[in-house]
Amino acid sequence: MRIRLAEMNTGPVLAGAVNGRALLTRLLDATADEPREPEPLLLDFGDIDVATASFLRESLLTFRDVVRHRRSNFYPVVANAPKAVLEELAEVLEPRGDVMMTCKIHGDDSVADAELIGQLDPKQKLTFELVREHGETDARELMRDYGEREQLKHPTAWNNRLASLAGLGLIVELSEGRSKRYRRLFGEQ
Image 1: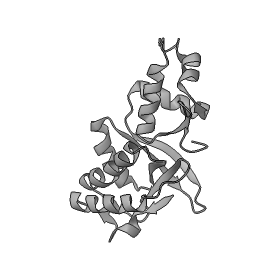
Image 2: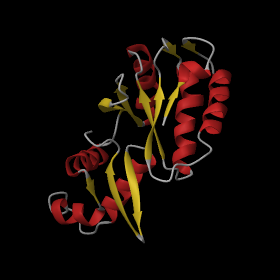
Image 3: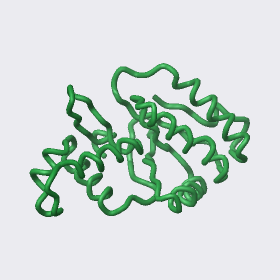
Image 4: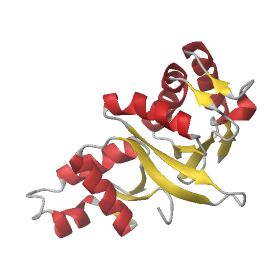
């Protein structure tokens, strides 16, 4: 799903906490119907020039947190954001130790240049990179392949890291009965 933020606002400048909360309401309304399968939710910043920290905090980050806490099949991604918006977003994310996925959308709706903005702790970053490398995995596989190297004795640490990354919307969580598998958000990430 793709939501063009320029169509939900009155201009190319997104500013202020009050306006951020108004966008949050519109985003929640637009995503009230859940998809059957997990999918990226592309929050398209095309035609947006600037977004302030207060606006991003009250809209984008709150929306991501609400959607991920309700264990939605939507995985919010910042798309087509100009440099000024990415810089402001980084200023909000990094002090919080937070991170979001960003990408570009081409004219044919294909996604490219998927990358993280913000800062993951080293253990989460390693886990994220391993999921990227494997495409799809679970805690048992990571334990089997990397547990000794990471000096781990139980898959619980991997479970916690994977669940945390899914909670941030960086990887997709797939339930298989009582067990869970995790995969990249985008196929060729």
